Image 1: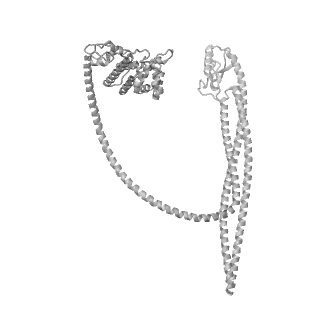
Image 2: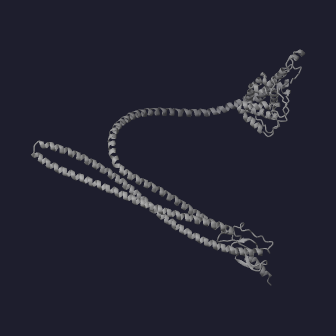
Image 3: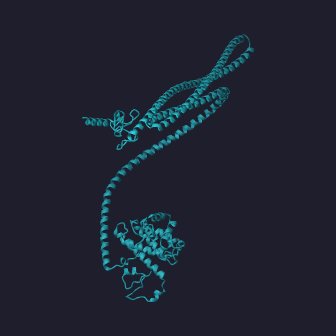
Length: 638
């Protein structure tokens, strides 16, 4: 696209019409120069100059405007038109019917693949409802990129990838040459501008992109007006600067007071830091002293432990030999206790199941009370529920028999444990008898020693040797006595432990007896439930009889109602309260229809019977209808 404008010598006109031949003193260049230039290069230069003017004018006007730009701002509209022409230059046209490469939307769509942050713009453009053509999507994309202040970054990614751009542009296109890089560099200056553009409401598909050159061709009057506007803008800027200074001065005073308070708090913190450092040094010294003392104590304890370990090992060897039999007995008792605890848990679980079954039975009974109003269908459901309750009771009885067998087994186990404890006591008594025999032997040895001493006094040195031998025997006996005493102490401790185990077993037996009592109570409750069940069966049978009677009555009523034409017979489900006394219906308060008005009343409000014209027999009537009929009868009488 070439533009030829002649006869302008002003500086503004020379910038706008850079593509025109240079005219000096009203003269024109010869035609040979025009013929030699490449038309595509001229088009690129023209578009570059127009882009420079539009970007420069947009930045200057936006800064002087001092606010965010709207979509109606004329320099902004012209900028988008110029950018559209730049992107359209050298675009390939294919023969395919649905090809996007006929418009600038094709190369702009590539930006999503090259620049991941541009995916949001692409998705938002596709989601816009009013856009139908690819050109409209491209225009919306340019507006969103300007608002994001990333138009230069997005287009730079496109220019770098010339291999991909060659699919959409010719080799001589503006985006394929250096002019495209220059335009992208100019677009960086647009990051200063804040724009708020409404893309949804605009008709971007049908807009016509025409460049308005009058905005860039300036007269002397326009220059004077611009100078005035610049002066006014400078005055307004000075005013705003003075107001900001006043605000800052007000904030400076408050900042000074804060600084003073912070300095005071800082001095206090420094003093506290010094005190804390001194305390830390003292604590570190105390820590070192304590660590040295701790090491000394550890050395002493280790030596003592080594000595005691040797003694303990010897004692353990002797103790293990004596402990084997008792350990076996203890392990058997422990196993039995575990089995009993498991049985107890099973009993408790079954009891909880029984309690839950009891609650379920109570809920079933409540449901039976509510469902009595529903005639034969509800009676069948209630009978099924009662059969299920029977099966549950049979299962409960079988479980109770199983619990009784378990209790018998537990009593047998307790008897076995008592026999084992008796055996242990017999063994302890035998050990005590041995100790008594040893003490008697010691006494006899002492008597013999006294006798030998008397004989040794009478005899000579030969007997002294015998005395020394006897003394050695005494020492050995004393050591044996000490060992036996230690054995006795260990046996007493084992006896105390076994007594504690017996007491624990007794407590468990008491708990088992309590469980038996609870079991008997549950049996009583079960019998009571059975009685209630039988009573309810009887009540259900009575209700069945009453329902059969009520069916016969209903048939009579239906026959009577055939004669009634204008009356409305209410349904049982619609009525929940009596119409006169307004009390809720229940088992004690049953529903009754008035044969005159068709409404539903309780027994107290409809216990009257009168013959009606439809039926010669006396029929149930509510109190209000009864009073009205009596008044009519009295008025008809002479």
